[in-house]
Length: 266
Image (cartoon, rainbow, N blue to C red; front, side, top):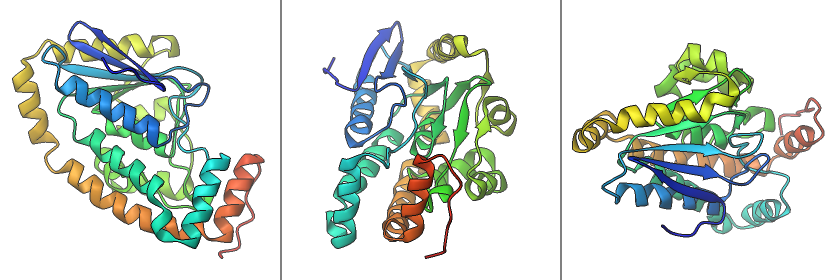
């Protein structure tokens, strides 16, 4: 298989395993999302693989974007001067849509925090296995920002519109147990069993007819990638506007300093 820098890719019988390797928090960037999309395409083209597991090393499953990263701050500054310079973030969403276009079922092993775009990545999977210690959060409004990674489409479809609104408007962290109750996760097990349980579920799926799986999944997820693409186009436009505000700068600073933000509405 292709050599990757931020993930590892393995085959276990009819199950493919992708492990994110950017511990401890597994912040994503264009490269990571591109590598995950590439690995899923490899699985799609491998007749032996019928389902896959997306897991991660470290403390978090994926803590989303690192807004304190100097390279990202430079990209944002350029984007404010010239909207056309906003290609890296736009390109990340292009790669995100590729994940939604894959053909075979994915089980996410969410053993820790899935925050912001990291929640979007977890939700891109068909199923989520988690634990009580995990935290699911769309913390965008607490940053003075707008949700991204297609979450404005995917989250309401998964947990219902009002639950999604509650998660978006409060930016609260939902525990693994709460996530399971609301349908955000499918299985909740002890933390040290999350990956094994995800592999078990993927193996159960892989016992089924591969052609039947692909056909049925295509029906169940018909139009999803296109809806996500439309959502990310809108999300990006809103994020570009909000990125230039004082509130966004304050939200990022307050989060880094672990304090409540002093928003001004400008």
